[in-house]
Image (cartoon, rainbow, N blue to C red; front, side):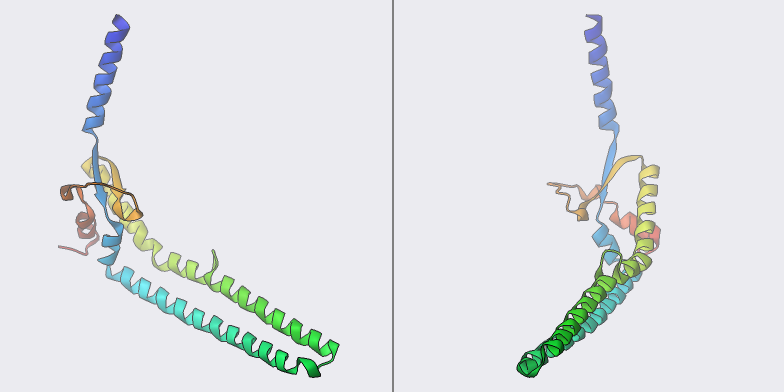
Length: 171
């Protein structure tokens, strides 16, 4: 009987502790859309991406031209000349793949530039959210932009504007 009383008391205290925890949420997409430096960084990344994509497309056009040229001259070429032309085309294709990897690969130039331009903004947002959580006594602050499905959320617990205010982007 004594154990039953202790278990009931622990369950009661756990329930009270769970109710005392505070939760809030932010929408990082909304926050980022309201930070001009993020928009400028995105524009720069888009411009670089487009420029590099055009460069790759030019190289692919060159490969297509070489291939068409090879197809039209193929009948007139010796086996040695055919082999050299084919090697040239294959080599050019490898170069283009390397260029794509250099620009758009997992550790490519675009990734590095994104790290340089966007990561400091994301870090600042994280530190601000962490500060709000600590000061406000929040157990958890969810990010609604991360694809988390929330069936309902009360706008009074949305801390997105507070994050923007603390970052100096809203009054």
